[in-house]
Amino acid sequence: MVDRSEERIRVLIVDDVAETRENLRKLLSFDPEIEVVATAATGEEGVQLARELHPHVVLMDINLPGIDGITATEQIVQEVPTAQIVILSVQGETGYMRRAMAAGARDYLVKPPSGDELINAIRRAYEIGKTQAARIAPPTVAQPVSGQPGPARRGQLITVFAPKGGVGCTTVAVNLAIALQEHLGVSKKVAVLDGSLQFGDVGVMLNLQTNRSLADLAGRVDELDADLLTSVLTPHPTGIKALLAPPHPEAAESLRAAEGDEGIGRVIRAVVGKMLEQFDYVVADTWSWVDDLSLALLDEATLILVVLDPLIPAVKSARLFLDLARKLDYPDEKVALVINAADRRTGLRVDQIERALIPAIGHIPYDERAGFSAANRGVPLISEERNSAVARGFARLAHAVLERLEQIASEEEEEDVEAEVSRRLLGRILR
Ligand SMILES: Nc1ncnc2c1ncn2[C@@H]1O[C@H](COP(=O)(O)OP(=O)(O)OP(=O)(O)O)[C@@H](O)[C@H]1O
Ligand SMILES: [Mg+2]
Image 1: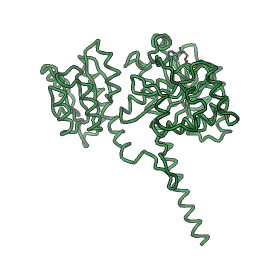
Image 2: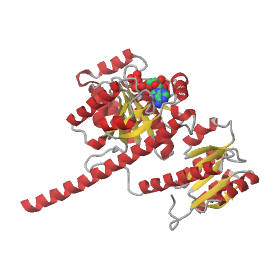
Image 3: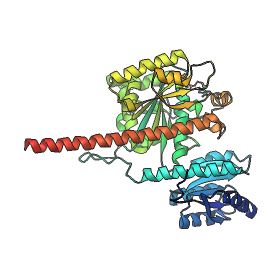
Image 4: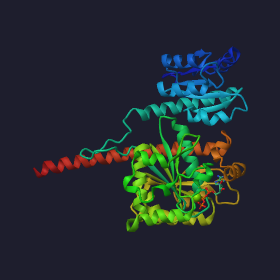
C-alpha cells in the first residue's frame, strides 16, 4: 500500500500511438495513488522526460519511431536508475521479453493490459524501486582492508545444495540467478557457477552451446585474473553469466589432477574469490554429496539454500544436512530451505516439513509443462511463461534471498561494532 501522506506514484507513458497513451492515462486515472506526470511519443522524448521528471515508473512501448523501447530502457536505466521500467508490447513480441529484461526492464505486460494488471505492475515496480533506493543509500561494495591492496570482494556467494539428488537443485540455482538479475536490473551483475563437476547440467538448462568451462582453468589457477575469468564465462540472454562444469568427466578429472594434493577445493576457492570481485551475486550449483569441492562452496557462501522436495527421503536428508551444518559451525541464518514441487499432491504438506525442519525461505510449485521445456529445450522454468506460478515463486525467492543477505550483512556489521567497542574497552583497561 502506498502511503498517501508521502507521495503518489509518478508515471511516465511512452507510446507512439496517441490513442494508446490516452487509454493508459484513463485506466490509471481511476487510481488516486497514481499520477501520470507526462506522456511521450518517441523513445528520445521518453528518455528526455525521464531525465527531467524522475518518474517512479515508466510504461514503455517496444516499437517506437527512432530509438526503440529497449534502447530507451537501457538509457533510462543508466541515467535515471531510480526509474522502474514496465514494458508494454503486443502479443507475439515475447522474443523481445528477454532483451527487455536484459536491458533492465522491471516487468513485461502484453497489450492491452487490464486495469488491474497495469496497476499491480506499477505498484510492484514502485515498491521494488523503493527497496532498491534504500539499498543504494549505504555503500554496498566492500572496501579493501587497509594494507591489502588489490580489488576487494564485492559480491556474495549463494550456494544451492540438495543432500538428496534429483529434487531440483540445478533448477533452483539457475532460475534463482535469472530471477535475481531480473529483480536487480542491469546495474547489478549476477553469475551462476556449475559446481557439479562431473555431470554438471547448468549449460543444458540454459541451452548454452559453448566449449568454455572450468576445465579451461586446469593448471592455470595461479594466473587467474579478471581477463582469464572473463574468457571462460558464457553469457546468457537474460543477462547472467555462466561458468560451466567441464564438458565430460575426464576433463573434470584433469582439472582435479592438475592441482595435486591441494586439490579441487583450492581451485574452487580461487575461482569463487575472483568471481566475487566481478559479480554482485554468484549462485553456485552443487552435486549431492559433501566432499572437498562442495565443502569449499558451502564454506565460502554467505547463504546456503538447501533444496528438497516434499518426500520423506529428501526431508530426511535435509535433516541430516542441517545437523551437519551445525557441526560445521555455520550460523543458523546462513542456512535456508527451499521446498521445490511444494504443491505435489502425493507429498508431505509444507507445514509438516517446516515443523520437522525449519521454516522455508521459498516454496516453488511443480509445473509439468515448464519442466518439460526446461529439460528438453533449455528454457528455464521462469522464462517459459512470465506470470506462471513457478515464475512468481522464483521472483519471491529472489526477494527473500536478498532480504536474508541484508539481514546477515547488518548482523555482521553489528558484530563488528561490538568487537570494536570491546577492543577499545579492553585497550582502556589495559592502559
Ligand atoms: N518445480 C519444478 N517443476 C517442474 N519440473 C521441475 C521442477 N523442478 C525441477 N524440475 C525438473 O526436474 C528435473 C530434475 O531437476 P534438476 O536437474 O534441477 O534436479 P537436481 O537436484 O539438480 O538433480 P541432480 O541430482 O541430477 O543434479 C529436471 O528435468 C527439471 O526440469
Ligand atoms: Mg543438478
